Image 1 (tube, rainbow, N blue to C red):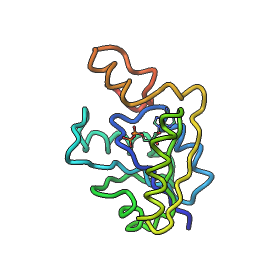
Image 2: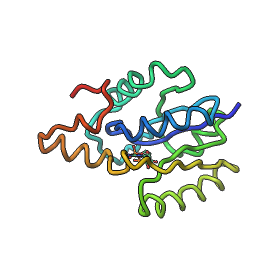
Image 3: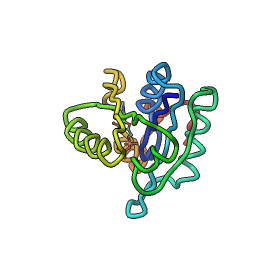
Image 4: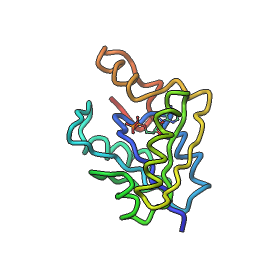
Length: 151
Ligand code: ADP
């Protein structure tokens, strides 16, 4: 069974994340969208809220599960039997960052492969960082958010 983990902060989940997962559904038997919890990092939305949104957004996709984990992504993948990590690439800086992480995960995760999908042009400008800035500035972030998220 081909299991992929799609790790991220999802603070909050955007239309870009959703598009990526939908495009990856035919590639895997199961995709676990998993929030990586880093105790050193502060988030705009708490874990419960982010999990709830993910569950709502992927409720109608039977091969997509939602979860969260602490510590190393590679360890988490091993614990759930996932041999693949799913990540998105929007631009060259995503690539530079992801390349190193993917090489590390391959070593510490005992051969885990990271599968990258290039962002669709219509979504490549969307990031959780931008969405958080819009929200903090009291702007309307709804064009970038899945319909299930009502702020
Ligand atoms: P992290 O904090 O791990 O970067 P994010 O929630 O910001 O987590 O992103 C998770 C993954 O989703 C990353 O691989 C990122 O490249 C991808 N991603 C984020 N936004 C988009 C988008 N608009 N289109 C495609 N992929 C995206």
